[in-house]
Length: 144
Image (cartoon, rainbow, N blue to C red):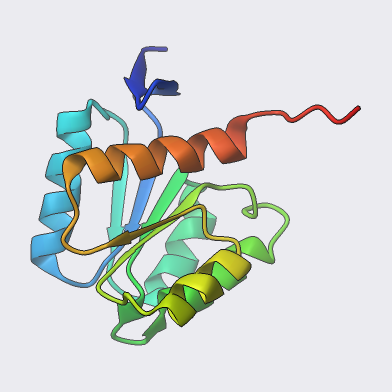
């Protein structure tokens, strides 16, 4: 398995990335940025919460990138559903949105988001947030 290093943390380059985003331009930008970072695995695109719920069960992704505002609901609702399911609760989850109110950011953190990016993003910001989220959910912590 080939690895790529993002922000000084190694991640397999073939992980399955799940994108919940309803705007085509942002779907394409995310795909292009992920490829330029070195990801070579499967990317699943979905534009609605309803489709996301079906696809996340069918595909069991390694990382979720989600918008907040979607045609049939909110990404925060999808986040809560993911975090409340024992099978999916440890999947790294990054919110990528235009919603920049502090109350929304705090709500996302309280709901278990691992990273929060305000659109438009830079590739460095995407790299840092994915690295942090993946490290957070894939590192065993020892408690003495």
